Each structure stands twice: as structure tokens, then as C-alpha cells.
Image (cartoon, rainbow, N blue to C red; front, side, top):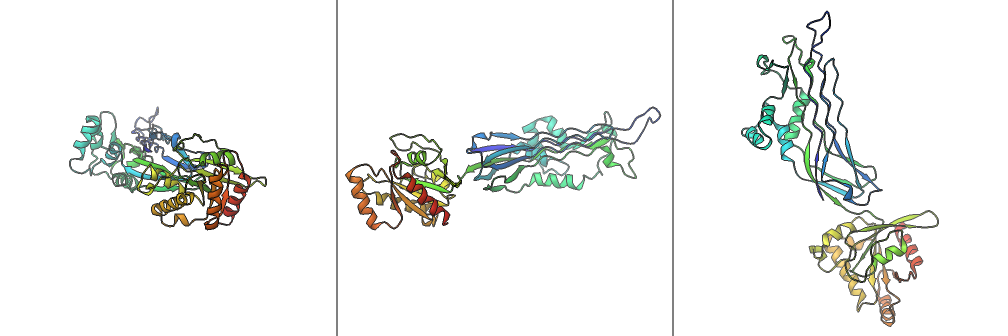
Length: 389
């Protein structure tokens, strides 16, 4: 999925002077603006899909500074929890926020015209002058020689030329900063100098970073169930775990991966992912192949679920291994075993099992997921294989 993220706008500095009964013209006491909130993505093992992520994510803005040296509070950060295995990539940058951030005294030629067309005349006037002026004193302020604070100028350059973002959130609690909040503008006390004792100007806050992101979920599980469509993977997952994927007597019932947890009596647990069915040519994205295959890569152990009632089930296994290797070199050589499903389907299934067992190079376990036969042996065999990795 794609989403747009934006950090909160920094608050503007305040232009203010201390006033009291006996101090009619006191020193400057304008507070600085608060820093805008940032947007974070955090991996959470309790999340199972990207459906919780909105298409537009924006952190809270920083508040403006006020008189009597009252600094504006910072904006609230936005923390979005995503499933483990989420891959974050930047697609493009949100032009409006990046343009407003890049605007300033050294804006490139033609930049302000484009900004005015996008955001209007008021935005252009603000971009031309990053300063906040004391009421009715703008014409009397000379800011031509005023230098921006080093961190302020560095943040403007960073917004104008941001680094590409790429992250892989594979561990629970892992965080990545996807949009930093804008800096708050310093108040007028910041500009006091030996030659300027009463500055009537402060700086506006900067907008936060803005990006367009692509989030891709690569399911992380201990065991990945791989098989042709309608081989019985979803039925098997229902039989061995607490998951309840849809089951129907036609292909492609499962269109999204399901993860189930298989508990054992000694408190050991393993997670099993039901990968949607693969078809020949899946490595070329036939039948939504890439959308399915990318979830297999994260599995530590592969379990091939093959329909034993088909004419040549060993040919199905060879086709599955070929598709895995063509998609990701060496993927088919991961630790694996074969569950020969529908072993109760009559004489054809028995004859296929006897013939296959004589030539199989992987552990072959006959099961009936529908009637839950030999399931206990299958789960303990998978556990031994997983513990040996």
C-alpha cells in the first residue's frame, strides 16, 4: 500500500518586549516556536495487516511562541504500528511541503513562481520572507544582513535535498523515523547583538518533512505452507493452529497470507503461515505470483502441501521447487518436508503414496487435513525440523 506522511509544522517565534509599570521599554522577551511532531513507524508483533495504516499520516504542529519568554510546546509525535516484516520504501516526495521547506532567501530561480501557483499569493509572500515582524514595523526592519541559525539553515537544506528512505522492520519494537517535524522559529531575543539591541523580528517555523511511502508486508513465520491451489493448505492450518482461514472446494480461496500459532503441551509454540496457492510461472508474476512468493522468503522452514489424489503429485512438488528457485535462488534448498494431503482419497492416493515413498528425497508424511488424521505426527515432525535449523 502507499501512504503520504508529513511531519508537523514548527511554530513561529514571537516578537515581544518586556513591559512593566516602571519599565516602558524593556528588553526583547519573545518565546521560540515549538518543534513539530515527527511520524514514526513501529513494528508490532500484535498487528497482522497493514489495514491499520491510513493513507495520510500527519504529526501534530508545534505551537507559536508567546511573550514573557514563553516558548511554544512541541507537536505531538505520531507513532503508527505496523506488522513485523513491513518493508518501507520511499516512492516520491510530497511536493507542496518540500517546496515550502526549500523556500527561503536562497531559493532557486523560478521556484517562488511555482510555489505561488501551487499554494497561492500568501504562501509566496511568506516564502520570500522567513521572518515574523513586529506589528507595523516591517518597513523599518533591515534583515538583509541577518544570518539564519546554523541548525535552521541545515534543516532547510535537508528538506530541499532529503535522503532516500528505506527500512525493513523485522523485529518487534523496531522503529524508523519516516518524517521529521519542522524546527520552531527562534524568538526575537535570539537576534540581539551589539549593534541590534531591539530586534523587531523573529523567524517563522519550518514545515516538517513530507514523503510518499510504499509499505510492503513480508510475512514472518517459522513455517511456510507452500502448495498448488486447492491442495488443502488452509484446511491444514485450521487443523493444526488457532487460525480460521476461509475454506472452499475451489482454487484461490486464500488471497492473503494467514498466520496461525501451533501450541505444544510443553509451552513451545511455532507460527505457521498459509501462503496462497502458487501456479506455474509464478516467478514471472503469473497468478499474482510475486504477491504470494515474497511471503515465503521470510519462513525458516518450508512445508510442501501436495494433493496426493492428483495424477502425479511428485510433479507438483518439482514445479513448486522450480518456481521458488526461479524467484529467489536457493529458496527451495531450505529445510523442508512434504505433507501428502488427502491421503484418505481412496486407492489412487494409496498407490501414489507407495510409489512416491520409494523415490522421495524429502520426508514424506501422509495426512488428511479434512478429517484431522495423522496431524499430531505432522506437527511434531515440523517441530523437530524447526529445532534442527
